[in-house]
Image: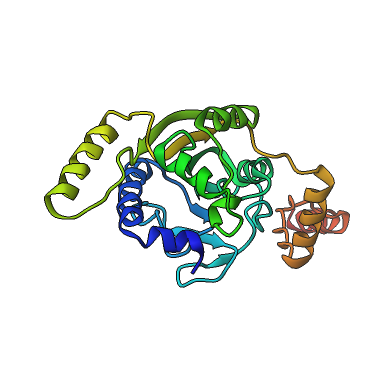
Length: 261
């Protein structure tokens, strides 16, 4: 279990994860296609359970019960323009090169593909406390990369992705038990419904607007030649030939006619 998974196993983490999953489901209801991919540094936190897409890929660096693809986020072993919906769950928060991760995400997305980026808000209470805890090299927050919504929006615009909207969740941290915790949950629900900028987590929804990647013509020609060698060519059907009497047949008909006369 990674340290981020241990953090999500706590009360506040479980509450935030459930709130995030509910918000993601609202976007996935209208995201259709053939292939869905979720990337991130956690395992067992699948956010695609409400998606109508049947083929779902859960990629991570370490094996897990729900992981079916081991890969680095900045080097995905997938074809270009192959993923219809992609969920990046804290993929940018703990990486050395968020620009390369975004370029790889943009590469595998199909034109008009849906992108959901789930990240920690560096301007929230959680973001500020995380940076303070990250001063210690022993804390896993030391590797936390603060990517704000505005910066992420600029990066996606340069990559040809249009941001649709952003949801902010977890403005009020959950603590205590009983009525006090329920009171905090109601306040946080009100903040979420009004989409206040102080949420601990943001969910940025974007759509890839650029055209598909054009592969070299020679590459497609070689592939076609290989396919032609594997598939037997159909035998052409014989075409009808018009009847043409021979000279021998004509002279025989003339002789028969003379005898009859």
